[in-house]
Length: 186
Image 1 (tube, rainbow, N blue to C red):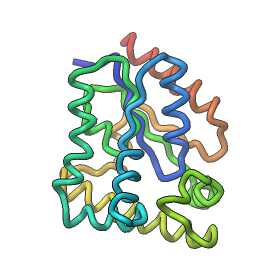
Image 2: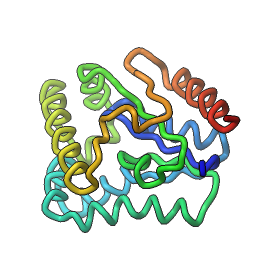
Image 3: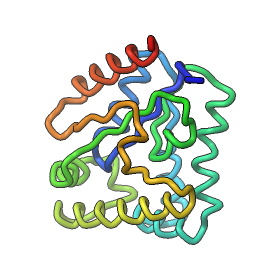
């Protein structure tokens, strides 16, 4: 059975996942549930960069499971939700599942210029940002496979895949809304 009232959005680092999730939730008047924000706050609380914290999670799967379980539990008890989470599609498998892709060079430039990332990932150059993002992605994919036995980067897991490299957030929002309406009416 489909959860027609839950949209899960994941994607590459700096693909616009958080921006578009927020815009979509506001546009649909849905609640925005953000696992990434929770994870970043935990990283700061542990005195680590987000990349260090993701490495730390490899040896502390109970924390990783707690983070992912929070989305599952929230969706069980609420309707009209946009889930902004790397594993949101897995946590709520009957949701409308969206994956946002982005070219790594564009992603690094976006991330480096984003002042909201500085608390958890303050890197000196765009190239250092890119290297850190590649490392973090590899760590995350390995961790997700080891913990959940899934390949998050397998695009067949998703109902919609969008390359955001050359799109404005409003264009991505429009594509998601159109595909979501079609999915709901199937």
